[in-house]
Image (cartoon, rainbow, N blue to C red; front, side):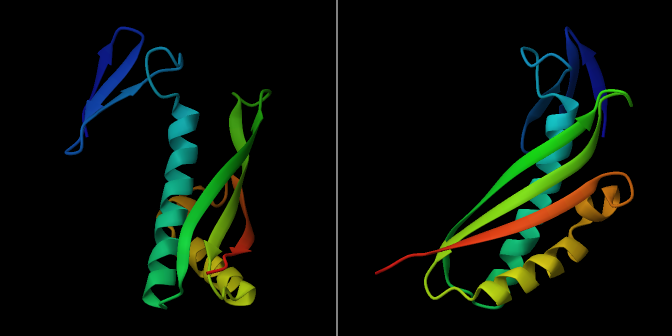
Length: 130
């Protein structure tokens, strides 16, 4: 990966497209946003793969991220709470929770920050009627 200085930030390119990074949101994504997006995106992606592999019938999954930062330590991220909302038919809450634990153990981004950021996951299931 190569990163280049630009006015107000940094630019990099990937196969999918360009990414603009900056501490100022008017010039690009802030680094902490990218960190949280990486953890949440990886966690949701692994969770979806597990549910699909087990043929669990869901209509939608949303993850909301709530973060805490410590301004006394370079404003570092100290905690990320990922709240999963699974919508579907005939959902088994215990199975959904067990699979969430499995996804946490298999998400490379969660495992990468394991000893520096507390990652908590909560789950809510919404039963849809036909």
